[in-house]
Length: 122
Image (tube, rainbow, N blue to C red; front, side, top):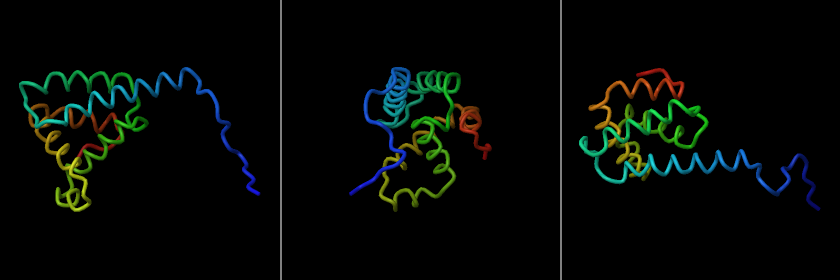
């Protein structure tokens, strides 16, 4: 016999949490879509800046899945790329290259993202 204590009752999700989760997923998918192709300043710079402006204005960075992903990428920028490739995570390597190129165009965003994620700027 299995006895559970303190389990969450299954059922309807409160509307506010459901809406916030949907919005988080939509923003995450849109932001991550930028990484699907190699960075091109003329195509990606301004739209990605607008996405980041919306993110840092509206959300707590560390709490969102996108915030966690961006934190991983910021950490990986400073780590050897070989470590990401050895783990078999080619998406990290690709996304880090993209984000590095973006930071070459917009160096101030690195500090702003780090502050938003509550990570000291490196």
